[in-house]
Image 1: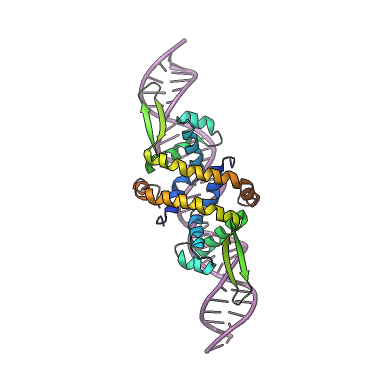
Image 2: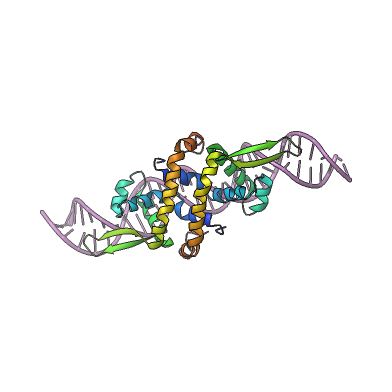
Length: 110
Length: 110
DNA sequence: AGGCATGGTGAAAAAATTATCCCCCACCCT
DNA sequence: AGGGTGGGGGATAATTTTTTCACCATGCCT
């Protein structure tokens, strides 16, 4: 089922919040607490789970600073970096077609 | 939440089977029965639901031929066509990174 | 009539995803 | 000791998505 590259990519980028999380990290919001503040409509727990998943995929890695209180920063790995242009393409397409899609998305809500 | 184009795109392309379905249609497998045969691991019902969703988004449209038995073909709309290059990018990235992703996907199965 | 093919749906169950709640740890400070 | 910060996790519930199962309709054919 993960035979087509499309499925692999969708698995990584899909899910309700992963794309947003990656977009945040990209914009420099890389600390858990900062992500929680930025994405207030998402429970911290969920953000952590997604971060873990992305980390497992090797898209981001966790930089831990031995400070006190401890500081953590998530950054893109090389593979993660290679995903950025792909996200750009998605982002652009989404922006160009938002109205069109949303018009027919009445049922399949938000 | 659908403010970033990324979310819009993910909504369209995401889900467990939509990407695969669109890939099939693209390859010329556009009739429901053919899709069912091609994607045997997916229940016909689900394929229909996804087709409906894509149709609602205006990505594909349904061509009905008044033959007997009735024949139906799903085809891309103009907006759907504009999504193809985007899928290409996803497909390519997925193919290039399949091994890497799958290695860490043990938990987050299939 | 019964069997084939086509395309399709409603209801309910199962599975996966997301959310909530309350807890933990270490360490600083007052 | 109590309160603050920063980073986590388990258990459970709610929600969404996917699946199964049984069923409908048309019109062919034997």
